[in-house]
Image (cartoon, rainbow, N blue to C red; front, side, top):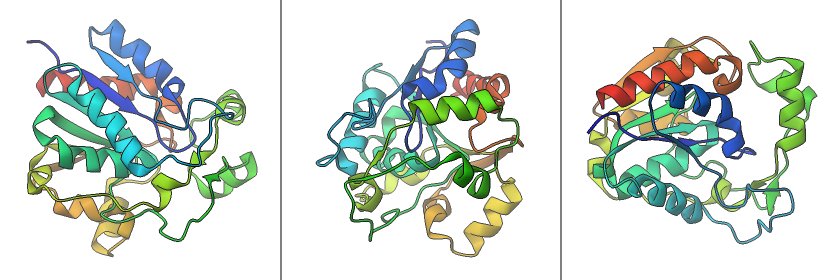
Length: 233
């Protein structure tokens, strides 16, 4: 049936636009990529007050089911929680789950977050908190112009994880901002935001040293890795 379709889910503050360069390269190589904008992230003007984690999970589940055959699901950063919860609902529809510089928690990302939304960080905050290797001023300016607040519901809601079959979904972590060794050390230390990785029965690691946003800093390499996974899925 050819290559598996590739569903691309951006992390906090981002829409489908964040994957534009990767989508272009995947299509040029004969793949079928579909980038998502999760509920509440279409524009700064959207009402985010009632958006829940279940809304995000549901949007991913719908996208995964739409092709009618198993897909490669790639989730970036904070989207790992909704992506992992989606694999709990439809494990048979996911041929491979790719975590792009992230890992899934089994609980809420921040159960104490009580605001309607979380604003995008400033450039100064990014430079202090995130690996920015390979990002240009243009990349950072685009983030400042297009990023929108993250809905609060998906930050504080607890994912529903009840289906043991999710543990058998073949999965890959693409380690970019931190190395795979650093990820594995954090997992062994009990870092809650990675706890779901410890449940997986078929997990592998790929190192791609660059920023936390490899779709901008190394789009060719990221597209190649995702394309290879889709070809073999």
